[in-house]
Image 1 (tube, rainbow, N blue to C red):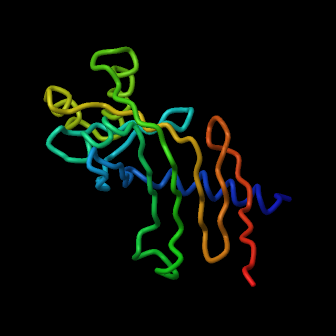
Image 2: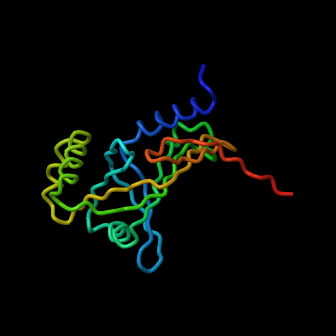
Length: 167
């Protein structure tokens, strides 16, 4: 039989598989939060690769700060309780992948496999850039009082977060 933490880890892995896009935020040079979303491809290290346009304000914020928060959140329509939607939040470093590098070529292939021909068209546009969002830590929230810290090189170690009661 599986321990509770093994069951949570299995739910965590299954939850991530359901997503094709992620929400992310960064901070621009004036300190303003910038939010965006993007389809992504994930590698075996659980790095997320997104292809972003310079026309979006979040792209320059990501480039400048080299930090992002990533959010994967349960669809409201499927949530039992809107106040306790299942979600994963990752704190990531963000790096632009040099165009035509081996990494760029392989991750663009991943994006094409996942999203089809539109990626081939976007790939020809010079204002689009590939970014790697590399999680440093995270939190998996499955409901009220059910938060798990996520650590490890592959973001595959979960530990229940216990909140101290205030008196």
